[in-house]
Every structure is written in structure tokens, then in C-alpha cells.
Figure 1 (cartoon, helix red, strand yellow):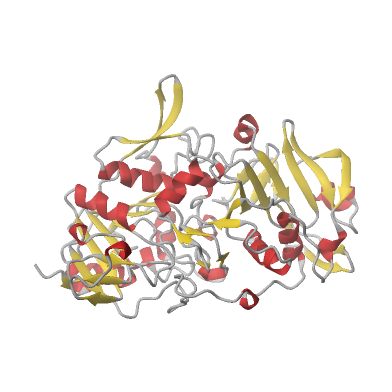
Figure 2 (cartoon, rainbow, N blue to C red; figure 1 turned 90 degrees about the vertical axis):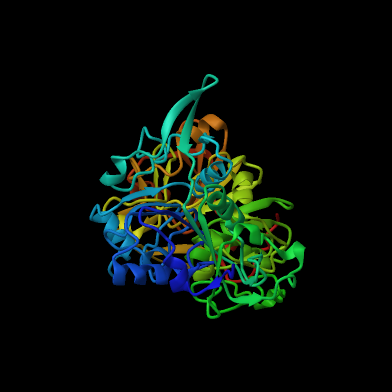
Length: 523
């Protein structure tokens, strides 16, 4: 049977009521041509209806112009399970998927990315589901939100607490998709897939296995088609025996904003001097202080936000290569990229399939994680996943819960409060206008990371801001450093909505953090 078909021909094979798994991370590896054709078919025919869509890492890009928004149509989509969601710019309407979530037009779940991959793996092997401690005492736990993003989801729970051999665990059911929509660079005529121009493979193999072993359909979008037998077997990441249909899309983007950057896919290495280092501002001060927490030889996970600049601090300080960066999409080593290329790395040493990377993270095999925060409360719990007043402005947790569940050391970073006007001046911090919104609060809107559980597990937790450094100890939050130029009481303690203790050995943050020249970082 000829496997190469148009996107329109491929989506006509998707039936009403199907469970459709999509392998992408925002605009990275997104099979956008197939999703667009699927949405257009519904617009013209009213079918397929009643779909459930599965998105392990991200359901669409920041703008809501790619990915799930193509199929975010009432009647077409009735359930979505996503690691994260498009949040949209603050000056625009929410992405279509968020409009459906807020109007209760479908059941929406925010399940940690690694767990979604685990659910697919269990479905592929026809096992009964996932037993995990990832997410206990957070919004994932059924004793809190149970991953539900709206009332319609709460009416059909996706996770439950169970007892197994005398311990409490979270149980998630296996996912057995009827359709897997994946993406690669090249397919041969038999459907063997290679990923030579991709920034990750994500979970393409696992998703194809889950659909194939469930009697489902596997659609692969690729940039080009080669003759049978011309792909090197070591380059094939998904074999053709798992692929039913090939859709050729020559114009597919490498990321949301990138036609093709060979450094993202490891086809060449960029000179280090081509990586932009940040100018001195409050964000750079925070990234510099985070860098002081690192040790030579560590494997370090990095998340979106201020901490994403830490690799560039190490380049500036002459320490590139002394820390190996590991990101959830699968890149190991190199330089993680910023903005809409986040999730990619240039000059990577290896690309690991995301499900394997999450296994590494969930067990705490790495040395340290650098992550952001929206809110922090009196117990040291962190919210990154939902703000009650504007839920559609947040993207959900992604891999955050998997990463933090057993990490040995976590450094959370961000501005002390929201809206403050500040500047760096001659080795000190100057606050021209105070912020209006406290980020250190009595209780977070949603628990993405449990400070209580972290203390019980003996995790090393710190919070780095431009004003101060705070540690989590057995009694709660304690201020250990304060920025030069600030008054501890007026500028720190009085500006938080929850009380801090002050270390008996309180010291000033290093003045070199606040000066334009290289700081002389020592790992």
C-alpha cells in the first residue's frame, strides 16, 4: 500500500470519538499541517466529532496559532490531556483552547509531562496504568485538584490515590490512542523516520507504539520523502512497521519562529561568541546569583524564565562546558536557547527521547534544577501553573512536577514582587518604585511544588531574587542574603505578604553581581 498521502486524505481516516495523541512541544516538532487539515475537515463536514487529544509536553505555541488551536472547536474536541497549554500575549484574546476550557466546553486536564508519556507507555504494553509518587501533595494529587483545570474535568477524575504494599501512590490509567500524529524530517517510502533537522524526537517512538499496539492509526508528517532503503538504519528513530501514513509538508517550521537552524539539530556547532550575553539589569543579577549555586561537573536541568540565562552567564565567565545542561525535550549539553526557541539547545552533545529524559528527572538522577516561580507561600510551596484571577495567562506545569518531585537541589528564581521599577547602580540595587503585587504570599493559588514534602524528603531548596536569597529549612523560609543598597526591613520584610525569619548569619549579596564587568565566578 502506498503510504504517502495528502494531509486531507490522512485526516479523513480519523473517526468520531477517537483518542488522538500529538507529538510536539509548542512549535517544536509540531505536525501542524496535519492538525490544520483536521480542523478544516471539521469546519466543512462537522466530523470527526467527540475527540480526545493528548499532548505530553505542550498543546500549542505561545500565540495559540499552532498545535491544538487548529482543532479547538466545540463539538470536535470534548477532552484534552496536556502537559502545558498556550497562554497567549497579555494584550490579546485567550487562545481558542483556553476559551473552550473557561466556557466548560470540554474537560481539560493538566497532567505532568512525564506522567503523560508514562501513560502512553503503559498503554503500549497493555498494562493497567501508572503508579507514581510524582505530584503527591501538589495540584496533581486528587486530594487537591487531581489535574483538573475546570468543573467538567472534575466530574470525570483522571487520577486516584491507591495503596500498594503499604504505601500511598497516585494511579493514572493507561492511554491507548486510536491515532498518533507525529513528526520527523525524512520518511522513506516504507515509513521509516529520521529526525536530522529536528531539535528533539520528543516521544515519537513511544506514541507510535501506543497507537500501533492499540490497533490505531499512525500519521507521520515529514519535510521530505526518500526512496526505500536509502536511510541509514542507525538514523531511523521510528521504524516504518509502525507508520501507516506519510504526509509531506516541505514548509514545516523547525520551531514556532525558525524555518531551519542547523545548530538546533546538531548539524553544526555555533562559535561561543555568537551567543548573546545579557546586558546588566535586574534579571542578569538574578541569573548571576543562581550561577553561584552551581558546581563543576554537575548535570543541571533548566527551565523557562530568568534562569534560562544562566548558561550565558557561564559563557561570559569562561565556564562553558563545566556544567551539562539537560532539558525536558531531550537535549543534553550545549547551550539551551531562549524565548520561542526554548526547549531547543544549540551545540547539544546528545538528543535523548523525552520519555527517557523524564525517567531521569522523576528519579532525581541529575544534580540540580533551576526553575522559575509565580508565587511562593509560607511553607515554601511554589506555584507556576495557575493564577486564579487570570488562569489563561499561565501555561500549566509542563515537566515542572516531574522535575521537582525528587530533585536533590532546586534553585527557584524570579523578581521579588511584580511591578517594581528598579535599576542597578554602581554595585547596588536601587528601587525607584515599589511593586503592587506580592509574590511571597500566605498561600499559593495552586501548589505546583510542595514545600512540606520537600522538607520531609530533605531536598535542598533556595529562592533567588534581585533583593535577597531565601532558603527553605525545617521551620520555613529564612532570608540569608540581602542586596547591597537595600534596607532589610523596608525593602524585603515589609514587601512580602508572608513573614520570613532572618538568618543569624545574614550577609550582603556579592557586590560583583551588580557591576557591568565579569564577576569572576568560581564554580
